[in-house]
Image (cartoon, rainbow, N blue to C red; front, side, top):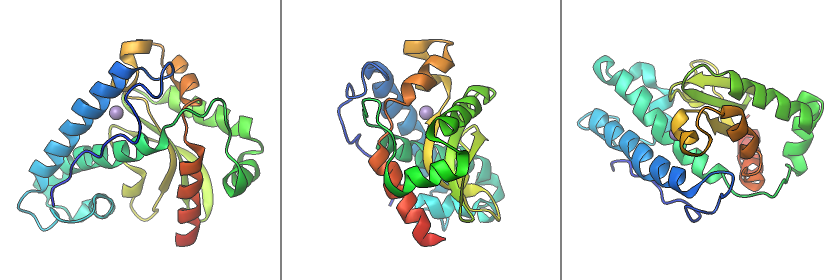
Length: 207
Ligand code: MN
């Protein structure tokens, strides 16, 4: 089964005013579609074409070398964006609760210290990439990846994304132009904390 772009679990305008409708339309319908089309093209005819995208990304070193860069970029883009759409939901200034909140406090000292750290990391990503809260080897951590590299691809050190912020210009330029920090500030208003908590609970089960 070739990959396809999942429907957004909300309306294109649902994240207004933090993330605008036009950005969501182009980001989801055009950018994500292009990653899917190019991933399918790269994997077509290989033994990997029917495998879940996480499995392909976790085994990039075994993907045929002439396809590897295209798969890394485009299957990575497909995985990262499929995660990102589900992670978003207007939260009206909400914060995490339950086990995830406890783990954030324990790891970073407080929610606001965590917020500062992820904000700082996202602000400093040079050019295009992502900043993440990941679960790895029993711990939470903040990390960044360039391009569409995905935490699930890190060799010998599987990292499970709990939160991810896309800081490619296509994610914010229509509304925020060069003002990435304003977009990152807005991002804190559109995190679906229930989904992040669910990811954390699932990650705990695998550790
Ligand atoms: Mn993007």
